Amino acid sequence: MPTVSVQIVTYNSEKDIKTCLDSVHSQSHQIQQVIIIDNKSTDKTLQIVGSFNNIHIIKNDLNNGFSGGHNQGIQNSKSDYVLVLNPDVRLGKEYIKNIIHKMEQNTGIGMATGKLFRDVDKKILDSTGIIMKKNRRAFDRGSGEIDKKQYDEDKKIFGVSGAAAIYRREMIEDLSYEEQFFDETFFAYKEDVDVSWRALLLGWESIYVSEAIAVHGRGWQEEIKRSEIPMNIRQKSYINRYYCLLKNDHLISFILHFPIILIYEISSNIYALLKERELLTIWKSFKVEFKPMLKKRKAIMRKRRLTNNQIYSYFRGIW
Image (spheres, rainbow, N blue to C red):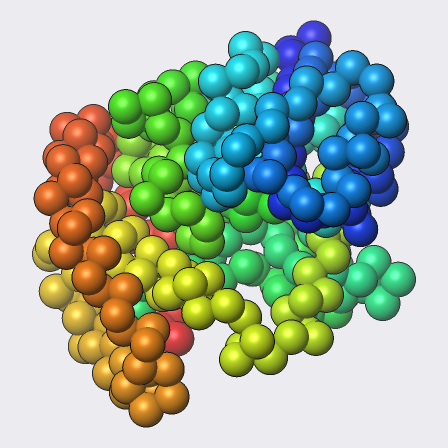
């Protein structure tokens, strides 16, 4: 039986972590190891985690972010597969079993995800994988839609959401640069898009498995206004898009899609200038990271295995 480890990065996650861990321990597929990487929670997260048996806890003295935390988890496991899981996700009992079954059929599959609901009772979907538009905007496929069985077919996709993603160990090792699978420059947001794009460049497949069911409670997206999200979080989400392009995009394809990209860039940055000028100050960090990103790009492109036509066939739709 292929081995699987589950890793969860927590930060003040007392509201969700017990339900999440209960669902992990109820999986029909045997789990080799559960790793909690805590980014210095100040609530009761660690007390709740401590009530469970056989969990390896990594306590950070500072907030190491999503990317840094999960890299720690990867370095502390040796399983064939790694399930990267958000603390606000509740897995269906067969989630891991159904995905591993599909991945074991094809060694070229590097990552997979299932059908994630935002509200399972109302059948509101959260994600069935990541799609990429030609304007370089990444979206969760099916997000906010009512499940009418329109996503009941397993299929290859651009990439998978980091909320409940299973990664093959061989792919993790193939993609890692200086012992980082997730690029820690990203800290949080779009790190899963970056991993998905890199995997595609290196020829790894990403799949969606419809029978693997989970619930991802993204209630904050509906309840909190954009203005209430901390500026540093908005800045990271904004600038990480450009890191993705710098690292992974191809110049000729970028030029071919440039009119579409330009329309989005003009509209989004005009909005930023008028409404969120502070957002643009993050470009200072982009200047600092520019050369290191180019080094990462060179490393990726040296290992690139697919043609432009194969890669950009996954870039569908204009907006």
